[in-house]
Image (tube, rainbow, N blue to C red; front, side, top):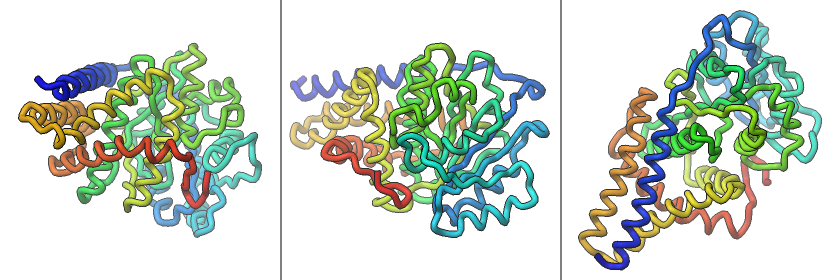
Length: 365
């Protein structure tokens, strides 16, 4: 074998071991509470300029199954400049479990969504906090399923989010979501927080208060991951990430390259808060994808076999999760994902390292 092939094989071997470990973690099962044991819960949705999405989100929230008088839903209008607030008001006027809230205070050094959430949490009454986004639609059993995992020692429960996949552009994003969330699930279930996504996550309100809330944390553009890390660092509670179809949330994919660019940059900036192990995992993945890019310069038949091996590793890592979540995965979308995944992972350091400016929801951070 050539030196190139040896390096490529070594990187793929470490990458393969990583995915095996994440698969083991993601396959873990957790006990659930019975219906009569479910705690009270508050759902918080922070919405900014979501007039195109907020109605379908609220309609899905209105269909949630949950014990009578144990659920409240707080819709936070984060200073929208469109018709978001009017649409919310018209929908909830005869639905007492819904509340509209407009944050007037800036808490600590918080900005944007983190400030909106922190304000809403001040008035939340539920023992368990669940969050999703205004461009999401939730499963009717979502709240019950997430809350059912809250044994006495559990402080955080993450959930999976899929995306619409009407075409290849959306489909590759949907696979990317499930792929990355499977990594997050596997790592967290083995005791290592690597990521969290605020459009499908939950935590115990008393533990949130224990860490001092968002206003006591350093500001982060990925406030969901910062919160998870802070809860985990208490080392007093369990943080889990079950693969459960009934806890699934569906969101809209980025409609164009520009919005996808800013989403990935935001995640990349948030990923810079990772620790040594997190960076090590990133490096192994980066090298394996870099070797694919270099293959035309060191072309051999063995190198082609290694590229095929890498694609198969990814396929058999993510396909079982799609099956567990009862989702379809088109082969053509998966192949586009492989191209997309390789390109953005290799490009991300060059996008993030020169500057950390983020544009999101009409604001610059």
